[in-house]
Image (cartoon, helix red, strand yellow):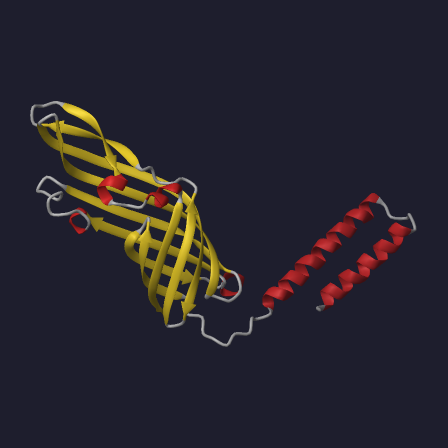
Length: 240
């Protein structure tokens, strides 16, 4: 314990004696609160200054690949900051997928050109060890689905123009397992779950247009559970 802390403790003891004897004033009581706050700050600072003993090297830069939902497949970057004894990290996920990757040949004709993109940024806090092990995360994500697709209604053929955005805040629980090469399983919950369907405008060859509905479960064969806010993915990568 530092000299400053010892002096603060003695002063607190002196004021407490005055308080018990009924001789403490309002001003002195304020000094008592201030002294207690200074002691708490001095103690917290001393705890922060004590370096954590580790039997491993913290590799702060992580580059990896994630597979799951809603990101589908994409890259992940994480940087472990020096804050909170190397337990606070910032993370960024990015995915982009073309329609010909997930549509069958009969569905993916010359008039179908759809792009999926996913961007997520947030912070992770490692609960027990610096930069590894179990962590909790808070993030903000943006899902975008855009392009065009072939449509047919009452014998009419046309093209549907799709431009759909969805934003959400999510909480996650995951673990970084390994050192230079690592495995990262992760689950989470989105407070604004993705809708199963959304509307878009279809334009037909005869000049008419209609509002149609795009069903993500039917068109992309996505399990229903992922439209209830559930998130899950697994990642691999290297840390430097």
